[in-house]
Length: 459
Image 1 (cartoon, rainbow, N blue to C red):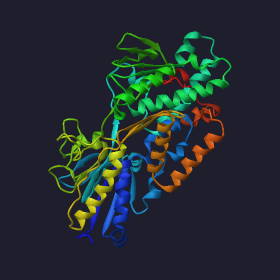
Image 2: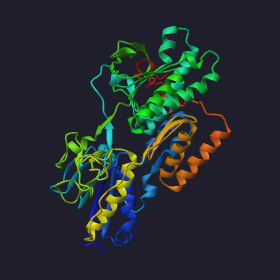
Image 3: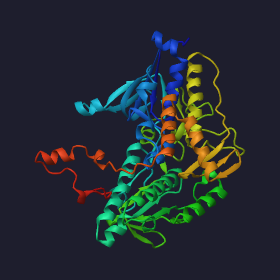
Image 4: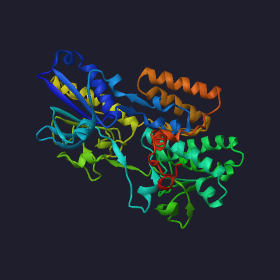
C-alpha cells in the first residue's frame, strides 16, 4: 500500500511513456481502484508508434493502422491528455501544458501539479542549417511521414510516366536519402524494393531509370550491426544500383537540386532527411540537470541524478550502462533499452511509493537487426552475424514479438501472410493529405493545394 495519494505524471507516449504507464497501471491496480494513486499521460498523439515498422508501412507491407497502438485502449486506468509539456518546474512540482483545448479556447497554457514525474518525451529530428532543407525535405519519424513518403514516391513515378520533359522526368525519378542509420537505410531499402516492383506496371518506367542515392557523412552505415555487416550492406545496396556515398554531406537542396560535398549535383524532387535526432526541447525548458548532449543525467536506478521524485529513460535520458566494460558508458538510445528501462522504471516508482529498495537497470545489448527490403536484411545478435533471408526473417520475428498487444501481433502476422500470397498494393492515396481540396474546389473556392507551391513535389 502506498504511503499517501500519489499523482504520477508521465510526459510522452512513446516506448518509455506507454510501457511505464502500462507497468504502473498493472502494479498499482488496487491503489488506482481506491483512489490512492493517479496516473496522467501527456502526449501529442493519442497513440504510440512502433517505429521499426515504419519502413514496412511505407512499402505497403503493413497497414498504417497496425503500426500504432491506441493509448486509451491499452491504458484504461490512466488519464490521457493530448497535448505537449512546454516547461517543467520540478522544484514546484508543476508542468506547463498546451492542449487541443487550450489552443481552441485561446487561454494559453495550463499548469498541472504532480508528485512523481516521468520524463519520456523522446527525441526530435536533428536538422542542420542547410539551404532548402526546411522547404524541400521530409523526415521519417512518424507514421504520417512514412505514408506521405510512400504516396510521394508513387506520385513521382506517375509524373515521370506522363511527362515529355526529360529534366522533369529525371528529377522525379531521383530519390536522395540523407543518413545511414536504421531509419535511412531501412526506409531506402523498403521503398526502392517497392518502387522496383511497381515499375512493372508502368509502360515507360524501368527500375534502372530510377536513381536512389544514400548520403552518409561517416565512413560506414548501420554501425549498430557491426563493421562487417555494415560493409556487406553497402555491397548489397550497390548491387541493387543504389548509389551509396560515404564521407559525404548534403550541402544544399535549394531549388530542388541536391548538392553534395563531393561536388555532385542531382536535380531531385525527393530529399529524405534521417540524419540523426536530438533531445526534445522540453528538457531544456526544465530545471533538471542535463549532460553535454542535452539529455537528462540519470542514475542506474533511472532517477534523475541529484533530484528526488523525477525519473527518465529512453532517448531523453543518459542512463549509465552498468554492463559495459568501459566505465562512463551510457545505454544506447534505442528501442531495445527503452522497453526494458520502462519496466524497471515503473517498478522503481512503485518501490518508492511503498518504501521498498530500488532496482538497478542492467541489460547487456543483445544486438541489432535491419531489413533491406523483401527477403533481404542484416543482423548481428549475440555476436552471430546473419545476412539475406535469415536476417530478414529474424528481423520480422523479433519485431513481431516486441510490438505491443496481442491484437497488433495478430493483425501484423495476418498482413504478412496475405502479402506473401497476393501481389503488393501500389496505390497512391495522396488526397489523404488534403481531404477537403476537391470539395473546396467544387464549392467555388481556390484550390487550397496548388501543385506549384508544393515543396515536396506532390501533385
